[in-house]
Amino acid sequence: MMNNKFLPVSTTLAGAIILFLGGCSKSADSAKEDSAASSSSHQAASSHEHAEVSLEDKIAEHAEAPESSAPDQNSDGPALRALGYIVGQQVGLQAGYSEEELEYIISGIRLASETGERPPDLQEHLNRAKAIVQEKRAVYLKKQQEKTENDAIPNIQAGEKFLMALAADSEVKITESGLHYKILEQGSGVVPKETDTVKVNYRGTLIDGTEFDSSYQRNAPGEFALNRVVKGWTEGLQLIGQGGKIMLYVPSNLAYGNNPRPGGIIKPGDLLIFEIEILEVNGAPAPPKGFPTNIPPPPSGPPPGFPPTRRPPDLPNNLPVTPPPPPKGAPPSPPPRSGSPGS
Image (tube, rainbow, N blue to C red; front, side):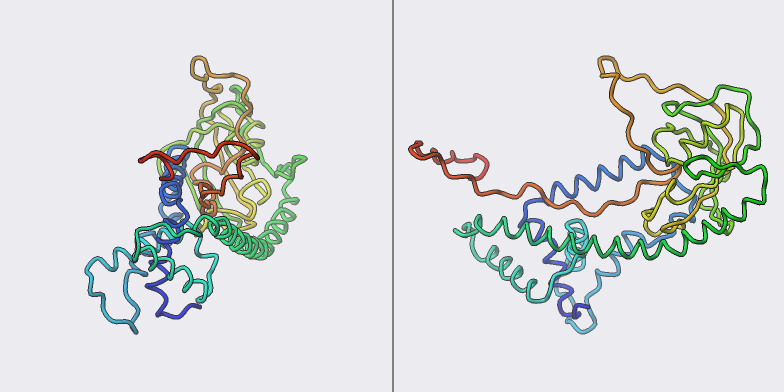
């Protein structure tokens, strides 16, 4: 745990690191694109599913100066600290830097504030700086993966025990993939294909009865492409026709696996239960005029009502790289013109 005296410095450092590596705009744009894609692809989940610490709460938590430090003399100090915190999250500083490493980076920040000249050895060290960030991120992701796998074990075991108990119900069938289902109404309409879009009413619960999503509560059926939902939905909804109703008991490997939405009700390894009614079956939407028709469908995504799992922050990939030396005997490159990139 880092000492309180380093909090203001480390959050300022977060902003400096991303500017130093040249990826601030790209990281921010990527985060916006992810958010927009999530909103356009999926309907909002029930209100209690979103009961997690908000971004505003995180900003407020870190906007206050530590008790041991002097009050901010600059009225914009808390806002700048909050900015540094968010930038640090985007660039992946949660991977962890020692106090000694922070001091080195801070010395670079001071150098940038003291001179407008580009240090002559900057290019030489940028590639190593990128490697350091990548190494720390790899270690951090490995630890996170190990933690989620350990967290999932008891939930997977609980799901297996639940499925064993379902064996007493003769109406419950099992597919080759391990999906358990019970057909409540077969339906007399067209049976959807994987490439079709379906309009459905549905309710999702955990094995303890906790409801995590419901179109009935929202009084708004959902419409989804079957090749854009979890495997359990893709397979299960092809077992009934329009007007049909089915219960799906979806093991974690056919749902979210060990990577559900962070902070949500669904936990790593959870088995999910869905009651689904197909209201309409529509064919695959026609591609725009002139668009290729032989593009394979996208991979299966999360079930209805849930945004995709948050991915780790992208690392800047636009770091300058030292160009290779010109071939022997080649004329030297002309100096860059004023105003050109790299000048």
